[in-house]
Image (cartoon, rainbow, N blue to C red; front, side, top):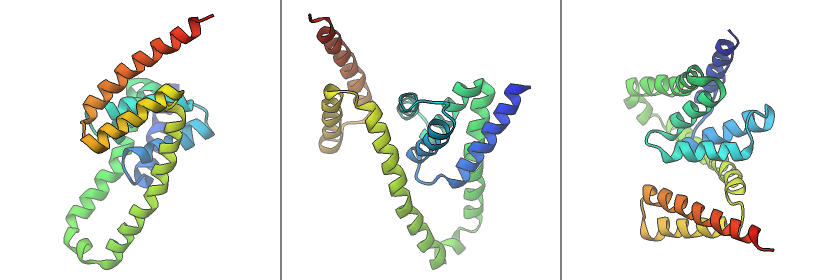
Length: 186
């Protein structure tokens, strides 16, 4: 019974996230950070970074992956399903309404200008989330170097995300062995 109550609470919270989260996967990370790291203490920043990294690195929509993984971590399979459906139900209903009234929306300058404002307001939310992720993910100088190299490979050479994830995993293994060697030195 306690698990069911928790799952219903997660559904309700993620339904609210689904109604108020604009800007894709990073926006939900910011919402989870504020609610479950800062206010409730259910996660640490490091755990959130790990969760977001996994959600980002597997196939599927990041926002759905994040909701499912968080829900599963918090309350098992039922929690994962509740978070996922809570997260996707509001956008689904909104998209259905937009599709139905698409032509009216596209011709309405008030709605189109409002959407431009929403896009602009999402940028700081994403930036806050990115800076939080960077603080937790870049643990030492080697991680910072790995981050710069990965960024350069992506921006300059358009290397795919999968290759960068593999590069990051291999880099993490190398960094771990370098750190171990430095710790073993007398």
